[in-house]
Amino acid sequence: MTAADLALATQSQLARIGCLSQIDGKWGESSREALQAYAERKGLKLASLAPTEELLNDLKAIGNRVCPLICGKGMEVRDNRCVEPGLSAYDGAWYLTRYAKTDCGDWRELSTLIFVRNGIVYSAAIRMRRRRQSG
Image 1 (tube, helix red, strand yellow):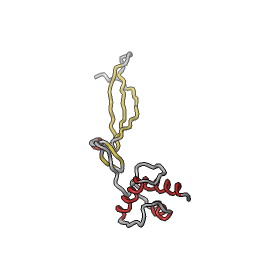
Image 2 (tube, rainbow, N blue to C red):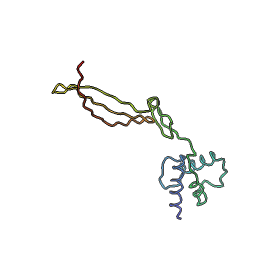
Image 3 (cartoon, helix red, strand yellow):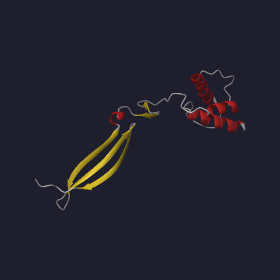
Image 4 (cartoon, rainbow, N blue to C red):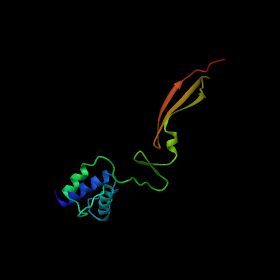
């Protein structure tokens, strides 16, 4: 493996475990800092902050995030992702309904099913026709 390939592969593994944010194939200061953060989290003393095949194999064997996720201002960590605070209180499925009178005098129900999960909102429009019941 060439030095450039080794640097790129090691950066990819450091990013996968959450210790490096940008992969550029150049082993520079940010790569060395990421490797140092990995070593500190794992309680390791490294002889060098340069990529080696042994280090690469050790990184590949790690299954989970090692370094903590750091979110930007106004965001918080939830389920290994950065989300806006407060939206998780609404996690679940929400069914919104409105009724509108058609030109024919019938009542039409327009409904939307909305899902909120970890600050992400998904929706699926559901249209149903309902006749107005006379009382």
